[in-house]
Image (tube, rainbow, N blue to C red):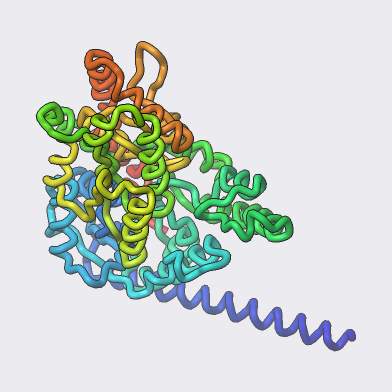
Length: 481
């Protein structure tokens, strides 16, 4: 028995020594690469932004490109690199899409891409079980590929892959900055599991099984502790909303490093749009958002079904209504999701009242804003809600989920200062839409004007100012680790 213990101790010690050796060799390799670069009189600071889905065209990508533009405008002696897994797109195609989608002007000469071949390691579909853990370990694999391809002085994560921070900090010797859209895990997720609520991140088979629920609760609690440890490796932390800030402060507990920087919304241009809704045959209800499960597009369809019941005695009004769902697809899984929603719309007999528009151009999106009167957003605990702000700036009356960013930061529902409506379930959404439809024109215009006046604090300029304030401490340092 004693000899077996010695054998186990020997094996454990051997594995630990092996891991330490690999760590030291990798660290030495990275340092040598940096020293070689500086010995060739290349004294520019290498700033790398980690965004494996930089060509997706969503709100997170707007943050990336506005951050890139802000860095270009302020700093001359830096070289910008973007780690991306969009292997099918060339540099010019990615930049053209960014400028076309977000109406941005970028200095393309100062932007370089580092293509990563192992992006599939962070895709949720790869991990049917223990998805959070699988994606987090996968992000570390992707981080190692990124670091071996390019050794930056400053590493900025703009997607929320916190498990990459120790790789770039301890092995790469980089200063770490991050922009966190939402925590990988939150106390809200834990509460849903404890309450046996079936959701996109909690399968019904788990929700119905007490033992499986207990296992998942333990797993979530352990994961949240590790998540806090890796998050604290960041030198400066930006969060996009009050909701995200509260969770990150609870999990990472570094308030002196944490800055709330609202994401950039193109409010200046949208506030100038002239509405064409009054001359439009249909009353358009507009939904804008990526086709991802958490956006809860099925709830929007269910709300339309409930609305039809509420308007049962007003068939003429119902026939004028059209739900226009506009969004981008990242991959085949998203395209399959759109097909399923089209089938669901037919199942609810809504095929003549719902229109899906996928991967539209910026100009097409502007046209959608101009013909729409009401905006719809259904995601529960949306971390912020860029599309909510954009719709309000364009003059739409928003109905959003009563949670997260829309509730805490964006929409005011108090009488006298109302800027929109908040809803909980399908019937609640339908009731809010019906209220807007039957409101007087003067009252609706008052809400629209108040909403448009409230969005300046979410402008691109405000984002750039906040981003540069948060990131300057690590970019202005003369020496790096």
